[in-house]
Length: 261
Image 1: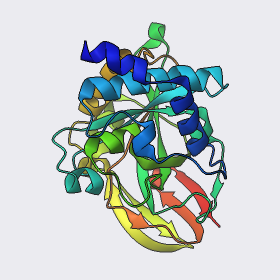
Image 2 (image 1 turned 135 degrees about the vertical axis):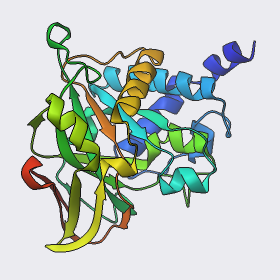
Image 3 (image 1 turned 30 degrees about the vertical axis):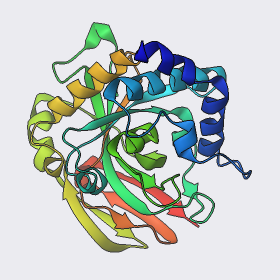
């Protein structure tokens, strides 16, 4: 009964309001607490919201691009007393820009990330159907007035993701999949090092995060297919967003870059 009532409460208008948030429409919008399911929401309600959001994004010509996995090491998840990694869908609009306005996007943090790309079914390696990996930079900016009020609110707001910049593509092989967790990188701001990290800070078993992403994508009716991405965040402490150029240098595995203006 509760599920049926909740599904009816996810109106098209509410989803379109949230789409306006993602598009950074400069209008007076309702507060997110009035757009999302009543917070704190159950896992089932968050899944239902993401399912309906994927449909709305598709209707507005924004393609589903994959799943972002935010681990327990994430500072927001820890501060909200989260007990498990959070999976959220990501869409094509997150990958469109390489430069972001700190003021317009209400940016708070810059976070390095590691992105995996799904292969086709006929050529699926053992590593969670992933064929390659990329260094990536994610820019974070909460759409709540101050701070997410709960873990479920953080999840409904797509873990505060504003944009994702991916860099050099690297083919995964048996050697790289074993050494990848300990492979360190450095984050630069205007050529000055500001942070170091590695996938091991997120998990010693990246396949665990990849499997979580596959399972969640199926839950929301968008199973991961060839060309989709799995973005693993929490690979280094977050750093406050400042105007300038950011680069993640991942040694022989290449780099990714973005700018904040």
